[in-house]
Length: 500
Ligand code: NAP
Image (cartoon, rainbow, N blue to C red; front, top):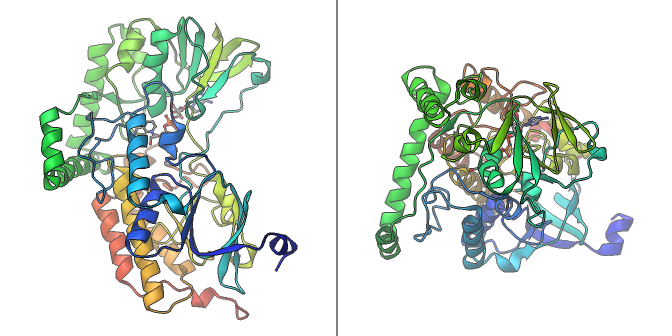
């Protein structure tokens, strides 16, 4: 026992889940449903919800249909819109936490600073700002869109106005009449730009790359449908399944050039042509890479905000600040009062990897020095009894994150249940299993649109590998993980040192 441990006397539990966002909620709900009650969920923030707690910028909403952006085991008959607002999703998640009995297991305001595998005791020692814990199993559900990525902008210190990232929005900053500079043109930016432009005096948008944007066609869900969904749970399930099948159809355009991709591209370019009248502006807003390489965005008010003149499009990156003047890469200068960075997240290099030590004290960040890898998306060689949710190759561009997260949570809970029933103390992917899985991912992603040359957070800049996205369909992912659940429990005996 270390000195620190002697002082704090670790609390011992069977399973620790780090993070109370969608993934942490999913796996905890499944654990509790399976009868595992010795679970603690450590969450550094003061509330649950992850992305949907943090992102409160004006216009924040989801671009996956509401009934598909929900747990299959906890449908919500009462979604108000086709595409839910961030606040409605956060309310839904709060309801799930309450109704699934997760609340007593939550430890909010608990920041995990170190997670170290103890080979002698065969458990994890978890250090937090609120004491130490030991657990047989550690489930990392710390999110992939949780750490803002801010570009290093020379001269930013000389800017005297408020600076916000899309995920650290401060509603107290008064934008009315202000000159606002927005950096970035991804999914977050296209939602907030029209809202900001409606109240700001002038909005300047720094666009490094133009996105593809297709119609959103949001609408209220008719009350007759909501009444029907409330009285007939099977109708909600059937509706969700239809939405799932529709979304899956979007995968073909991503992996193969051909009619589907051509059709998607022409929908986007027609949308641009219909909403932006000035040919020069249209040219600047036309992407110079293949559609699908980055997330295809949905909006009906982004182009009109630019077309109306309320937004000045600067078709180059923000290069530097000189006091309250923003300098674009083109050399153009713009006076600004407020700066908004909609510049995405540290997704390929998750900061939690610097806090996890596996066998022989090896850092997860070192294991992932060329990019994230895993076996079955959730198990990492050299890190016994660790499961990483929403980590390597676990995201999708064409379907709902809930589907992917549920598949991982189901595998995690099945493996834990089998460890108990088969009296296995330790599971771990072998290096060979991880390498084989990674090779399969590489084969499936070769030639796909994601590797066609654009800059995106799906691809690790160190290796050029597709590390965030699963290259197949959501159905393939479910099937691949379900198959792993049937195999003998993963063991790395060949890798275990003789002393272990
Ligand atoms: P993002 O997709 O990573 O976009 C970041 C944007 O910032 C890009 O346009 C990028 O330009 C730009 N950028 C980065 N550094 C820059 C610099 N130095 N100068 C100028 N521009 C710079 O981030 P995001 O928009 O926050 O979205 C992240 C993910 O969150 C999405 O892909 C999606 O999965 C999720 N999201 C979902 C929804 C939804 O409705 N479901 C809404 C918001 C977010 P480049 O393109 O040139 O790199």
